[in-house]
Image (tube, rainbow, N blue to C red; front, side):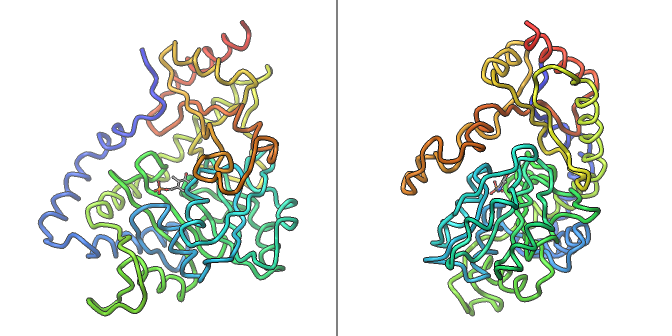
Length: 367
Ligand SMILES: *Cc1c(COP(=O)(O)O)cnc(C)c1O
């Protein structure tokens, strides 16, 4: 018996007929780039996020990169990013020639600690990227207030939080603009790479839609040096079908998270903390243990897939050696990276599988 970390194929089996139809729709349309499927998906995803605009792009990193470009962020500028995030958040800043300025998270929520942001702001700061890590919204009202006070752009990295609510409002429309990823393992995943930007700012939506398509609005007329960062028709068609299932699938994740939280009482396991204003979508169910590596090995021996998000923080990656950070510079992120472990969660994990995972974790902790 094995319990995989995430069974993505099961999603596609569940809606096979709809995906087959979407595939045939695209093949028979004769349009494969920036056609009616991309337009329809953009409208549907904007409606889902309660934003005025959505622009489909090739992946989540490009979504963030193009938003920063659209705001003219570049050489000499600084952008505040969390110390604990997937490296894509940082790379988007580096792509523009700007410098990522790391700020520590709140140790309970894992999201940017608003109380620590202002100390990192300099005259060169242009924007803050708030990541809704693990599917839980960051404290956007507090961060927005800081952004307003210092005239900074606030960009959401919503790659892990499709459908999450902050004080009843959907992520994706809580700052100036947001980047989403539809990498297959995300809550809303394509069958390949894909991403999108959401915003209520008409000017930014327009700029990003030009930037993603070679800097061109009219074919062969190039206003700016753009990129080829388009969402393709086939992925858009698949995403339209999977978007119809998103709330149901997020609901299943939530029921599993509630079950984990109910069963894991007592003991020295760190559990996710949900502030009363957050309605997370449980992209990951992350626990903490000082004996994390041994716990992961124990689960692997039982056939249970548990993963680490993430083993190495961006500030300690070789790719960012130029910034000269060391272990100890960001003690909160350091300890998080040493202790976190993501347990199986997803729309196709069964309740009985949760029971087995909980028992295996308990056996390890009690031994
Ligand atoms: C997945 C992810 C991204 C990047 O998305 P891609 O589609 O893989 O480029 C960015 N930020 C976070 C927090 C992510 O989890």
